[in-house]
Image (tube, rainbow, N blue to C red):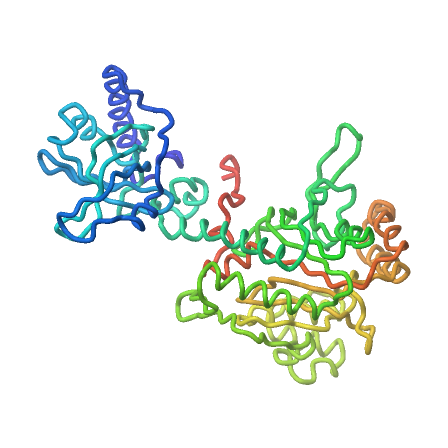
Length: 503
């Protein structure tokens, strides 16, 4: 049975229901009614109708209103029908009386199916039950629904189907609709915040000749006009820094990145990030920026700094947020003597703790395995993890008191990294040295320096880049935090899914 037929109906039931609706389509056409209508002008949002409604008690009649939306419920009572219509702002009850709209229109309304899209005009009034209702004076069919919606009380039961047929999920699942509508508001408020802070939004290439700015596996493509292999960008960092060289002092880009890696509840290969750079700042400048941004956006979109994630877990965004060094957090989990024991002892202890430490793993990677598996998942409340080993972040400026560490932070919330930020490295000599060290460490047979090291970026640095703070914010993860969602698929309109032919 195909996915499209899994709406709580068997395939024979679905075929029968669709056949009945096709018969109605022909009946409508024979009656001179277009089942797939035309524009329906001067409509009001249902939320606006509710807000401006003048009736306040049973028997009072308000002004005429005009709304359009999807028919979600219908209850027949002889010569009258109660129904519910829904648009993107909410639902409202309809009352359809045969004596008020005439025999023909009443007969047409009786033939409407749940899921049909209709336009309605009429005055508002209050029912005996105290419900604001539209007394229908005119009904126009705008689009006939040929497939029945999932059963009212069960909706889409297959989680994967919810993502594949997101349109059905949005129609039937109010929580999905709320979260994804809220995502749009969150993005708008992020842009408002950045613009009010004097940052300029820019756009940099998504197709790049080199995959730079982060350590990740890129998607590859081929540019026919240039006879050249290209990459979908894994980060916009190196282009944004060139803009600092060019004289733009406060820039940000909010757009898509692409990484050809795994999918899980916190990763999607196509994801949204915001990268921001501020000349003459540093990572502490970025700390203040992310604290202000997140708390401002939270208040404006969800109205609170304490986000309920269910099962008693509350993410508290109240300032100030915790600050701790990478080493301090590793010692909390690995033992106070973690950095004083020998590398061999660290391997032995790590394996006893259940860490995945294969033969030949470097000492740095052993500690980072501890951090990623036992520290990061425990950072539920906002925590700035500071002073990371220089080998992990080759684009950051070293700490003045110890060049073995870089002046950075990684913001962890709800067990994931949300926003790394750097005091950006602007020394072209040291940057070249780190790029070459990174190349030597990761090169594969046949790799060439010119294919892995971005000489254009290094050339730009040699003209002089001001000291700067830079930060990347995982927008999808931030939306998860603010909406209470526990999987990235719930905050993406169309998450990446395995192709049906691969199943």
